[in-house]
Length: 161
Image (tube, rainbow, N blue to C red; front, side, top):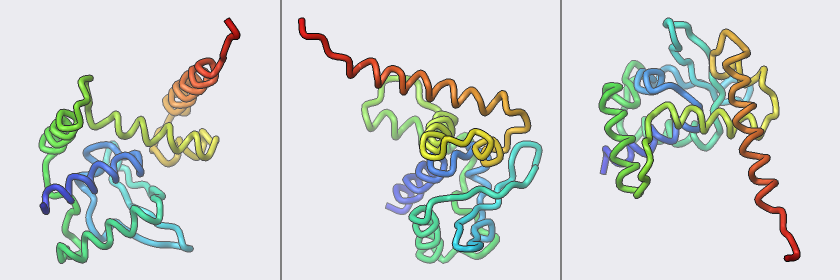
């Protein structure tokens, strides 16, 4: 059961924080913080560049509760597995859920980024959150979101005949 809980929390963290797989498996208890009632993770991003990432209150609670039950020390990693193992877990979960398309860890980052952009409508904030140096990369999420929204809108069109 421990691995099931760990795996669930890892997937939840990857999606809700829109993290890369490497950023996720490197997270330590001491990287979790609260400042001005905001829940944050200190993430070691691409090129070992550190950045603060805001996370939802419920996710912060789940991480803290998990760390306490697992008796993690500050320097302990939440998910002490390799990138490869994380990929295997994602694939196994997709198979178990009956998802028959190619699933990979970065899809969780993309999905989380689009969900964040839908809620905030702020591409600049998302750029900072994701750690993108170039706004062009972040704008790809806006483009994807607009396509999805237009499909949603068009699917609701009804004709009398």
